[in-house]
Length: 162
Image (tube, rainbow, N blue to C red; front, side, top):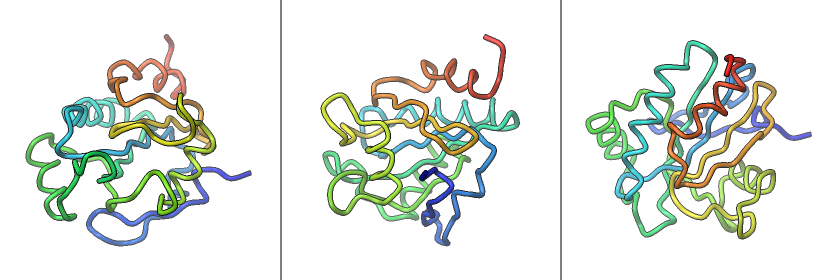
């Protein structure tokens, strides 16, 4: 059975990252963009990471330019934007495609594991996939679901009392 731990991805600043490094952690995978109406969600994602990282959460951000050309920058521009405007300190990865024939293998798997309401494809920037400590996709959240709204699901996987 395929899990998150079977994939690799390129870090935003370069270098291959083995996602098996996150085994034993709850993972929130998000496709992001810097010029989207939902971009302020970076703030909530960073808050989840800061608040719950010590409890076993990791947020993984994957910039994507497939929706309305809302992530036109290169790696340095994306890193600067995220750090300067939202203080992002969670791991960010190189720009990827999340749908279609050129989709990163991780996103092809995520889409197949938890299809969206109108099929497998991700509908827009800031779709979120919640993955348990074993690397299994537990839930998919639409881009409109804010990090604050999904916090109870994250805390439940972390074993927090509700």
